[in-house]
Image 1 (cartoon, helix red, strand yellow):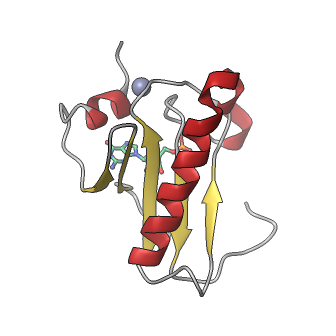
Image 2: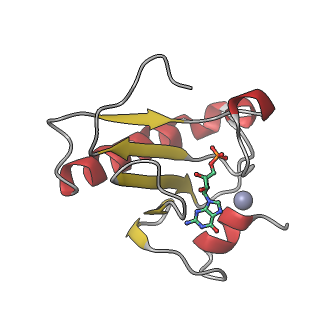
Image 3: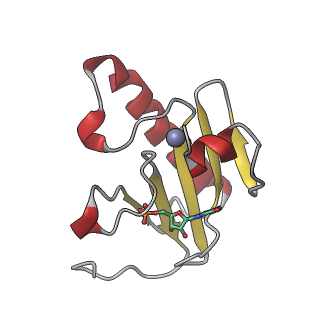
Length: 113
Ligand code: 5GP
Ligand code: ZN
């Protein structure tokens, strides 16, 4: 399968990996939109949130745990941060391997653009 984030997870394409375990990888976004901008992905290929199955429930929880861990490590947990998962075209999803954006280190705006 020709998937950019699968290739990053398999180290076939370089990325600044900041966390890895058996099920998840996190790396710096190549085009950061905030002082902290990491992407948290499952190693398993899942295209969008719409494709999650009951069996993925623990995995999704784990991805949130990883996001919290990175937020603490980056020193933005107490100040606050934003987690975003874009889904399909109108959201702006451009990579069809599910990922959580971790954004922080500056004040976030609401409503988002
Ligand atoms: P989406 O638009 O699908 O929600 O988010 C995809 C994100 O992946 C974007 O923020 C984009 O900057 C990032 N991205 C795209 N290609 C690469 C890449 O090759 N390496 C890294 N580290 N990030 C990428
Ligand atoms: Zn993939």
